[in-house]
Length: 135
Image (cartoon, rainbow, N blue to C red; front, side):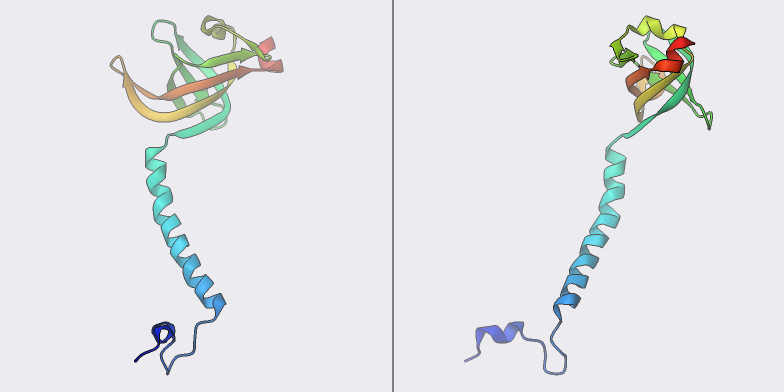
């Protein structure tokens, strides 16, 4: 009759695994999972960006804004229908944006179509503080 713990023993010609080796094998499994799982999640979740942008154009009828990233000049057409706008910490209206040229925008980049117009994402928050409010 065989003993139940014999199945867990290392073969006679091999030394038993040290705990460090077992941890290393488990870590490799987790790292492999992370390498494949993170890119999969990045396709599902939209990218969130925050930064300073130059306000190029505003569409009051469709509630769209065209902004340009200040250092790189990348342009984004954003849906601003549900954006939270603050000027020096106080709530502001969408129509008040026309008075400003530089704004801080928090946006979710995800290509979509709104009323036949291809947009790059949605603005979730627009903040105008101090020096930008004076312009």
